[in-house]
Image 1 (spheres, one colour):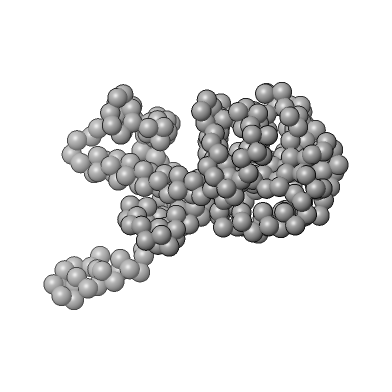
Image 2 (tube, helix red, strand yellow):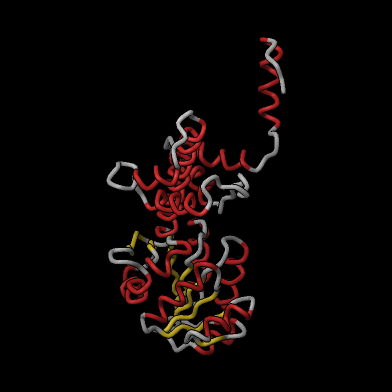
Length: 296
């Protein structure tokens, strides 16, 4: 198949490479031309502008966005609505909030352009292992683009999750679960480190992946991290978030679903970005006031 790919970041570039390796034709555009030229050397057709990308695609066109969620996606959807034609398709493969999908679909539908959302997981390992892909939208369109999804994902690694927004909704929940899993591993290894038993964290991570109930790909990544840097020296404790953990917690509140692990994991990331948090200073002051406990 032929596909227009906009956004050649850490995931977008490797997705383009998988499509090229699967004999699909990729027309690529990136804000910085260097990335576009890099993929062109590997077989893609380079486009210097979005208008040029649309011109180089055969109708009905398929354009896949791999862009940061929010205003950037909003702007690209509006621009494509003015460039594409009736019968064309836009797929948003970024980490967009599922409620924004509904708005984007309406904007494009007014021009006769179809829309699908695709939650993509795989990170920087996706090129080698494949990208797990969760899609939302018209089932007929899903079947039409299935060859692209099949090339992108590992075996059984893609799914039509439901109508518009369903793909990004499932990906949002996926990321919320990821937050909780990462927090549990982080706390466990800290308990090990703080004990009198000087266990090798790399060896423990490797051991737990040999049939234990906590084995996982995240634990394999922990082993790799400890192998490269046993004490994680030089790595800051600042932990960012892409927004999907926040949306998962918001959705839990809207749905009346208790999600204490996800919420706590999200809030711990906020704490990681503070130096000497004021709330902890309040705790120390209160202990001093009621019990005369020392402050440091």
